[in-house]
Image (cartoon, rainbow, N blue to C red; front, side):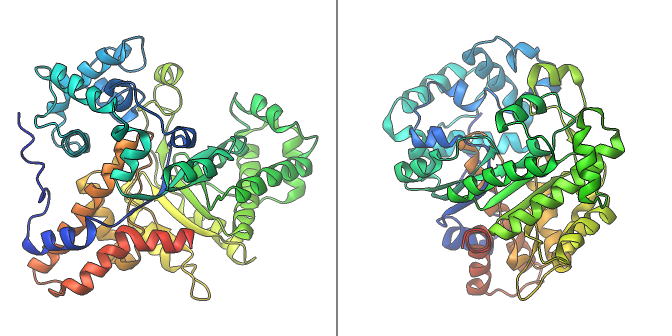
Length: 457
């Protein structure tokens, strides 16, 4: 099966769309403000041992598809070799048509490795050898590939206790601005078994006041190392209740015996505290809302918390979200905030909220890119339609990979093609003017400039 459909005009259905993409979007640098790359790999300009480890292993998207196909778990999280996992994935790839995995994988093979056939069970040996030959060369090191994607900014996700001093070295070595962002989930994870060892590493605090002081010390360290963003994974919907310091202090003292109500109160207090700290430091707060990560306890045990078995959760409790944002806004401590949802029923509300908290000419709330399971052609188009209808499309922040592999930076091109085609179709239907200069500049803003200016400048 030939990869002849991955052409220079892939996904571009009109002449206007093609001109938008090739004249404006294609060559714009990439600003990726949320990913799970290793800054140490960038600092060391890591060379990749083989295409199995690089492309398949530890990819939750691929594992999810392989489970759907009924493959044995050993080919995902088990003891199968990287070559065996690669072969299994290749055997499934042609059957993922309609999934973004098919488009992403074909773009990566064609555009990065110059493979001319869709990988499958008949040609996996050829693909393995061809990709590994290239990976052995300096031109396919981590930083060479990132530069090939024209990456200008790359912001990694880092726990409060991670060493973020490596990011400056990564920036120096790669020529790409590599910065940390705080993944703040551990700070709120009193209900997780992982909290106690994490708490001991932080330096056990005797009370809430000391805990907050230790957290602030680490936030200062992040700021000193270029951090401009934070991120919280708020599973399922969103719940928030107003909680005083005295209430939170009492709950912190008995944190090992919290009820569900007590945990919500303590978590609400800490999330509000953190948001205020982000605002004072000029950080952007990202809230990822709506994932249901507690599906199969069996798979969670073998694959970990990000093993590809989650699903969209309940819609957001919009009253709680507005109460949370408003409690910060009235105190002048609402940071710039990006809202993501895994439940598409929240799209219109999240897009509308972008107009609810602006102040002094500063847009405080942004509706983030189509996230995770919505990151496909239909989901991206729906995201753009909602931003257009309920917010302002020219101010859209564009795309981010939210991925652990550098090959996923192909998703920026995927997004840009869909964006240009969306606008081109509106022009074709007579709903937008055929003004290539105006719409071309808007495409540049969405693809590149908006995120750079709103987050980093």
